[in-house]
Structures are given as structure tokens and as C-alpha cells.
Image (cartoon, rainbow over all chains, first blue to last red; front, side, top):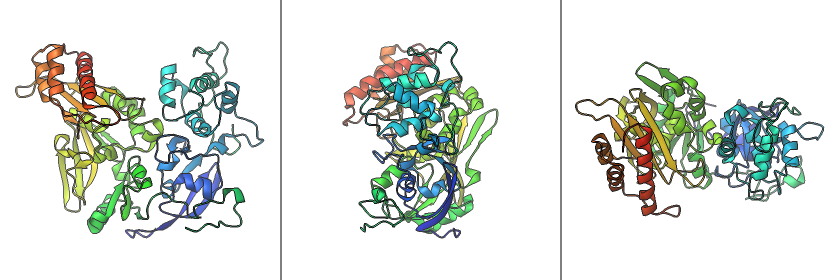
Length: 185
Length: 301
């Protein structure tokens, strides 16, 4: 862009789920709308559109953000990961997604992509207790489940038993890394 | 509004409100890559321009069309505004340093543990990824943690414009709700936090972790000098700005009972009634929180 000349639209380049994306976007386009309406990545849901509900959570350079509070132009040059990017290419479920299914951590599913994106970026070591899991999840609203089953799903995905303790012989906790490539699980 | 959609787009994503899906009202956008460019733009554009830092308070206002700036000046690509300079006596934190970066910095947590404690109350992790320390101070929300923390720790901010720089004490920064002493052509560029505090703590009451505080207190303690008892108590969410509870500080320094300190704190605020809590509730909350803070500071109350 021209130095010191305000613009209405901007050419941006970013990577979304591992693929390069180049678009000319109006400067007032939100990242959530870019993803859904320009890129047809409708796994990212928009609920409140003012940063409260968490349904639109995606990863920006590996860190969770509200895509409804991010102008698309400010994601220029960044790596964006949506729920499509953490889902295996063969249509199966990643272990974190499977834990949500198995623990009945969703009903209508509207909030689920946001929960998944918050969790996939979280470090289990930073959330050793149920209380700290609840604090982590407080940025995502769910109107169906009452959260209990979501917490259970997190415990299972992170290799803890249903009382929240580390399971004997559990594998490496899931969800401790951020998979950015499409089809990575 | 026009509805059509490109042929290449699957029919089911064809939007019902037009192809150019937008929430905010029209504005133009400027992305300076140096502080001088940003200050020049602010000086040229004046009231028409609004700087955007992390956008975690401004973008909701844009989405609601409560804020309708003519030009947004994005501070996100100015390297000089990011990073922490550490000395023995202070932390100098660039205004655009992300809250999450500060939260995860173990060295900062060792030197100033209360900063991490306060940041964990700031919104949710998704907000802190983008939110900045300077943006939070410049936004000056009376219920926010970082302005109260800056006030309690005797922080100063550096403010720049094309005319030069000046240093402003946190005590002089906050004039009213969402209002600071910054002129339209000035930018808050840095926060300097002294490390003289032996102990500091933050407590707050909120409906849900990460929500704005219905009442909160930051406390800090350092050795007394001849003209300063070395105790700070600052309430937030209990008035139109963060408010220093000077009478409660004096009562605490004088060894007053918990009841006396709490009474002094409650007398020092003028809380608002709103849908979340009425003034009496906030005052009761503050009394309890001040007592808790005194305990955490190791000062009998």
C-alpha cells in the first residue's frame, strides 16, 4: 500500500490451513467473513460478532483469536488455521474431535469449532486442574451441554481420567500442539 | 444492498445481504511501518483518525457501528512499539506488546508476579493473543485491570506526537470513562513500571472468569519513606475511572482494623448502578476485597 495514503481495499496474502491465499479485500472485511464468505470455509461459525461467544475462534500464527474481532487486512502475511485445518483429510475425526463425540461434548454443534480451536492451541500443562480447564473454556459459550461433557472430553483428550487425574499408562496428551497443515490431525 | 454472488461460489454460501459482507461502517485504512509515519498521519488527519492496536475493544465498537472513524491507523506493523526493556529498577513495555506475550514471559512473572495475575483476568486467552498493554491503557475502561494496575504501581506512560514526547503518570492519565489526557494527535508508546514493590496483588468479583469486574482491587506495598507510607489500594469497576483509595491506604498504614479499612475504602468510591450490580452490592464487594488484599499484602487489617 502507498505510504501515508489511506485505502478502502488492500491486496493481502495469507496462508489458510496450509494453502496460500491472495485476495483483494475491503479494509472493513472481518477475518471471519473472509473465511466464510470469500473462502467458503464455513466451519468457522459466527455467533455474537462482538467477541463474547467464541464460536469464531481460529488460530492466527498458532495462537487462538476471535476472527470476528480481526480485520482481514490485519491478518496479511499470517498463517490462519480453521477447524477444517485440524480435521483429517479422509473425513475422520482428530482425537480431540473424537473425544468430543465420545463424551457427548456437543449437541447442536454450533459452538464446537470454537471450542476445538481454543483447545487445539492450549498447553495441557498450563491447565492442570479442572478449575483451570474451566477458566480456559470460559471464553467459549455453549448453550446446550452445560459444559460438563465438554470438560469430560477435554480430560479424555488430555489423557486424564473422568475425575481429572492423569490416567495410568496414558499416551502423550492430545491437543498439545497446533497442527497447521490441512489434513494434519 | 445487492445480492448475487459469483458463479464460482457454491449456491449455499450465497449470502442474503450482499456480496460485500461487512459489519463496520466504511472507513479507510493506513498501515504505517514506523512511529514517525504514524505520528505524521495522526497530525495530518486529526480527529478523523483513530489508532487501532489489538482491536479487542475497538472492533466490537466498529461492528456495532458505535465507533465510525474516518481512518484507522494500524499500529501493528511498527517494530519500535513492541518489546520489553528490562532494567533492575523497572520494566519498559512497548505499547503494542501483546498481553499474552507478557503473560507467558517467565522473567516478567518472576520480577512482577502481579502483572501475570492481572492479565489472567483480562478477557479470555483469545482476547489476550491480540490485546495490547498500551491499547488497554489508552482505552481507559474503568472496569479493566491494567489501568488499575498501572495506577497502583505508580506506572508512567510515554506519549508521543510530532511535537515530541512527554511522560504522563498513570495518576494523571485517566480522566473519565474511556477518556485519557491524550490529545487526538498523540500516541501512547510505552509503559514504564517501577519494580520497587515488595508485594502486590489483585482480586476481583465477576460473574464469569474473564468478564469485566463488577468490583476489583489492586494492592501494592513497598518500604515507607518520610512522605509515602508505601501502600497502594486501587479500586476498579467501582466508579468512572480506576480510583485510588487513599483513605483506606492511610487506615491500613496506621494499623487500622479490617472494619476501619473497609469502611474507609467504601467511603472513597461512588459506584454506579447498572444491570450487572447495584451500587450497594459493589460497595459491599469492595469492602470484602480490600480486606482480602490487605491479607495478601501481609499487612494486618
